[in-house]
Amino acid sequence: MMIAIDDLVTAILARATKTKRLIVAIAGPPGAGKSTVSAAICAAINARENDAAVVVPMDGFHLDNAILDARDQRKRKGSPPTFDCAGFEVLLKRLLAGENDVIIPLFDRKLDLARAGAAVVSGDQHILLVEGNYLLLDQSPWDRLAPLFDMTVFLQVDRIELENRLVQRWLGFGYNVGSAQQRALSNDIPNADLVLSGSRPADYTVLN
Image 1 (cartoon, rainbow, N blue to C red):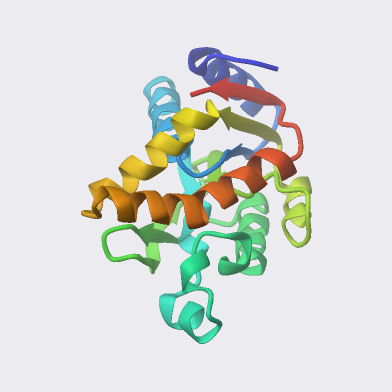
Image 2: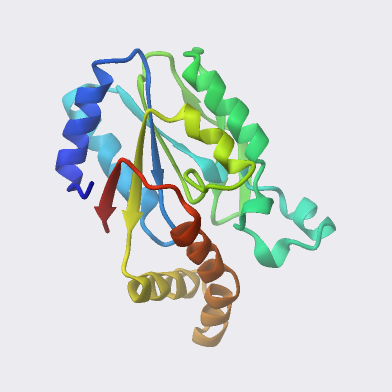
């Protein structure tokens, strides 16, 4: 079902009245704007219901570069095998159980690493906006996450626009045009294609 952001916020708030804690998956390919959209939805919800919502990013479960180097996976950083899916699954189960003050990791793009103990999800925050590339990926081990989500959202982006955004991302990190294109085409675009072709249908689709 295609939906606008404002209507999605309303749908989330309505659904949240029917459960003690609502976990919303916000998925999409790299460059789709998941972090930006999740932050906007979180702000809109909290403007109506103070501190009810929080964003929980999957990116905090990136494997460290030292591990990727040892496994010869650094060039594919951001692909499914370069995340700790099992650890992420454990976190989601703790959040679903309603534990109070759950400590979560966050990914620091400037440092290019995950920071442990970087944020806290309190028991009073009952709308959890979980965002990440592979939340709806229909392959093992990611398909084990499916029962943990109450609502699912997929961010749809035009393929050419997506490629442009991914190149611009690397330009923003100081790469020249050739290097930025190479980084995008060698890793980001294959990851994006996997998400686009291999994700389960979501409850709601947002054009972004």
